[in-house]
Amino acid sequence: MQQTTFQLTSKNYHSKEANQHYMSVSQFKAAIQCEAAMIAELKGEFIRPLSPAMAVGSYLHAGFEGNEAFCTYLQNHHDSIFNMKGNKYADYLKADEMMETVRNDKFCMFALDGEKEVIMTGDLFGAEWKIKVDSIHHQQGTFTDLKSIQAFDKRHWSEKYNAYVSFIQAHDYILQMYVYQEIIFQNTGRYYDPYIVVVTKETPPDKAILHFDSARFGFEEEYVQTMLPSILEAKQGIKKGHRCGKCAYCRANQQL
Ligand SMILES: [Zn+2]
Image (cartoon, rainbow, N blue to C red):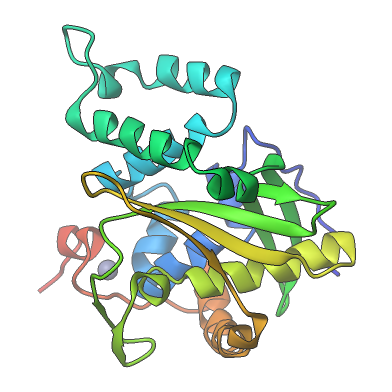
């Protein structure tokens, strides 16, 4: 494995420098959508707008990180969570309901038990990758990610699979679990069992625990291996990143 010179911590995990040094699942997914936007983001020339769904997702995660982490999160994001009267905005009241749904379920809490927000690095197809696992349980040999989605039955068109797919494929959860399992293996010498706890934004929220059979990882492994070289070349400036022509970055930087 390539020797790293970057000291990755929870403070700099999402920094531009960390993203320049490492590949990650979210960077890989962003590059598949639009390499040009991903590269501009790395250079600090483009800031991806934070969607309400992403904001609620990070709020949910903070809620399961423990009281101290959640209090700090509430302080740091006070103005986007609370209105002038000091009440939470509707999105966050909904998120509280989702949090309760997960907390009141023994199996969900069992799956989320373990060390939280664990950072690891490893090598996949000649690139250094970083991962941050929501929850990892070394004795059980399991790791779990927490996800919030609209609803279970919504179908999404996928160019990757060339078919209508469920939220699992649409959000590339299988790819994420494959990468996490492999990097965790490189760090522990053991293939851990991947789980995802999913909670929906419906009223009342629905929930599920998904287990991923690693038989499904072969396709994802091949996909990463196939797509990664082009992304790395764009990152290293060897070639120009492809433009999707549709995203916020492409629309703002369109030359007719
Ligand atoms: Zn684009």
